[in-house]
Length: 333
Ligand code: PBG
Image (cartoon, rainbow, N blue to C red; front, side, top):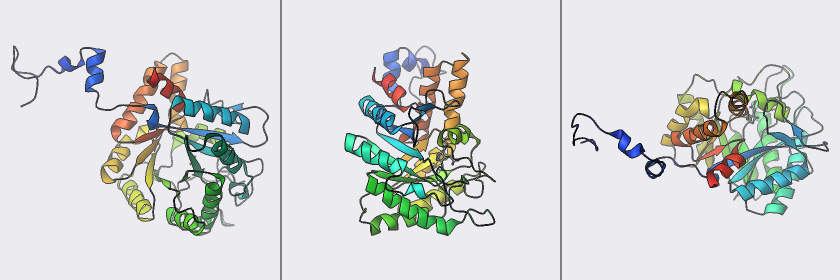
């Protein structure tokens, strides 16, 4: 029998009984959000003297190496779990050489942050070539302009080794090449990084919500788009295949991306696997709420926390979000 039936009105349940006060609602909350659930994506750019604001993402900047150190210390102080690092090099070329240069912008930043913070935050390195290639695609391209899967895998393995060497705690491949997790695992193992885990962007959709990120990371494709390697939004089963494949190749944790428009995918993936599931609340999700809040159309804090709670409710264990530090502060007080 459903609880709450009977009494003066035996015909219906009084769900309102458990919603009557903030304390009652806190007691009965089924999903909780805490700073440890959150990971902050950050951008570090080579050759700038001051942080550069990203116009489509109010409050988010391209960091200098120095400003990144400060932001990382604040993130640790706020109690979030980690950072996801993206680098924007001064020089780009066809194969993204700066991605695995030991003194490349992201690898230098990893080294510095590891020296500053030790193991206080989980330092995650986004592994992709789009910020590093002059054509803006996530892999190397053939003369005909096709993103070439297998030669790209060799590049990814080299980048993974460089990132692990620089101090990344977690390698997070986001390029959606087939076989990327196996190639990276083999590369890491061959360089004795057997203990470095892989967080696979397993179900990553070709999404319109990445728009502002392309300004932030300066990695917009110069021709074509990413729909031949990222997933097609109508598909669900394919996400489960991608996740299963990445786990079979050795992924330690998986990610769904974007998050808000793909809550059903998060729920299905979380049901299907027994490894940590992360979800990436992407730049367009951030920009939408910021724009609406700036116009006074939504209550900013309330809307932000609702999006994050919903992603957790769908089944994600952690959320990558540009609001990570601010939300962590709200959750603490
Ligand atoms: C690059 C990458 C993208 C994002 C994260 N890694 C962009 C893309 O695939 O085009 C998007 C993140 C965001 O929009 O916040 N592989």
